[in-house]
Length: 117
Image (tube, rainbow, N blue to C red; front, side, top):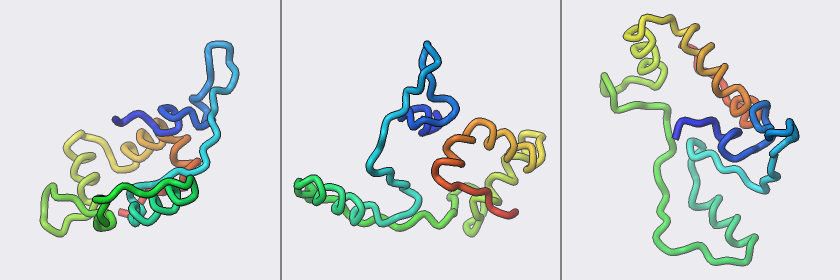
C-alpha cells in the first residue's frame, strides 16, 4: 500500500528500470489523485471518453481537507506528523527528508509539496 505510485505503476521515474537497465515505463492517459476530490465527475469524464456508462452508485465524497481524526478534533495533517516525528525522536525536517527520499519520483511526477508547519 505504501509503495510509491511511480514504482507500482511503472511510470518512468528513477525506480522504474528492468533487469537489463531499460525503462519499464508505461504511458498513462489519466492519473487521478484522490486527495483532489471530485472523483465521480472525473471518472464520468473518463468513462464517457471511452464510450462506457459510469456504473450507478458512485457518490461524491468530501474533499480531503488535510485533517486527521487522530489527536485533537481540529488537528491538521501537519500537526499529526509533527506529533509523529516527536514520538519517533526525529525532527520534522528529518521526517520530511525521509519521505522525500522514498517518494521523490511521486513528488516530482504529481507536483506534491510539503505543508508549512
